[in-house]
Image (cartoon, rainbow, N blue to C red):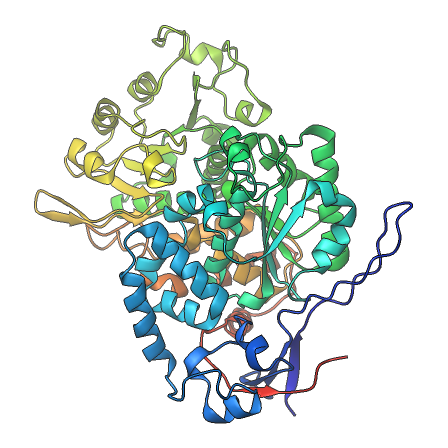
Length: 605
């Protein structure tokens, strides 16, 4: 007998009243009222829905546009609402791609894709799947940064939840107004540190929307089971507050105890409503990122992609570079420009890998040099060192005789001269921070340096791949946070790998969901990094990228998911399955963008 997996709106919210107010009506929002019907082998056979006519065409997960069959049109009250000719999805993709290509700029292409997603999600994901390398830079970095800056200007239709601080007493109602009852993955931001662009407030909603699009496009997560959320606690961005099109709460950013209480209320409500959801913290300021991760990682299944996802993909690029050069982790010296959440996360995960390879932790910790906007982080320097930075501060005596600038700070060039790093990483969001002198000095200290300028968007990158390869005579192993074209140098074509978190977090999410993991451990991210590094093309070809091409992202995500799921079992946070069973669970979880037959059924009571 077929069994049914129902995706319906949440139950009506109980009446929630402020003291002294009269009762208000219940939430009536209905967006996705449908049931997936599967056979005994868990294959999707058809969809049943109570929606008909124009209401059905307004539901992006059900709308097939010109692909509805004649029988469906008759059964679903669509006769006359659509043209007579039936087109299959491949023709729809070709037509839509033609329209996409006609857009004059990347931001216009981004707006086009968002509109398509709001109209027909199956077609949207099929288009992205067929043109993945071209689409991802438009959907996410670097174009998403511009989209967030202009979010109020390009806003068309609601997607996700805006949980506004002035409405905090209605937290339960706001979360129960979500479009679907069952949610597997949430990406949440407070908009304070969007990429390298800073505080964009509610405009940061473009990040959770974009990230969740990648969860589906790269990791096969059902789009109906994802939910973007913005915690709208105001903004300290004067340009946003002065913009008449800014869509958020027009107030300076809430901080301190009030902020902590608001986040606590959010998490407690999630624990009540969605106790099994995977929560991804995204683009929180350094002052909050580690604190929130530490506070909640053992209370709700959650991780911070800026800290852990960035760390995993960076560790993978380093491991791939070592595969290409034949070097060992024990021989590495890592200099990292940018001592915030991403930088600290990178140091910690690479340290974990060194320890896993048998290097004593005290020895491994001495292989990292971290710099912030005040120069090298070391104990006893004049500028304040936060607890996060203090974990990676160098002993004062070690650099007592190092050269200092006019402000008595030890800069990157002096650090590179002294350390002779084998790995140079940039996460400082300062364009041009890796100067020619710094890169040439790095190359003098090691024959094949691994150079990773990772800042996003492209305008914030520390150095371009073309410059790095020119300044190192083609010897550097380079990967970047945003996409870059191939570079020709001395007759060798170098394909630049994109050290993008999209190689990690979709697979991590898929592995967590498929294994039903209760928590996300650091070891699961290390497993993800190793799984990705195993697929490096650079070990076979001198000009090949450190990381595989985005065209193979599905295979990458499945490999990462399997490694994550197996590690979750080792860590005791997931049920025990064999490797074969785990892979079957992963493949059963995977959602494909294809049309299925839709039948009408009466409204659910």
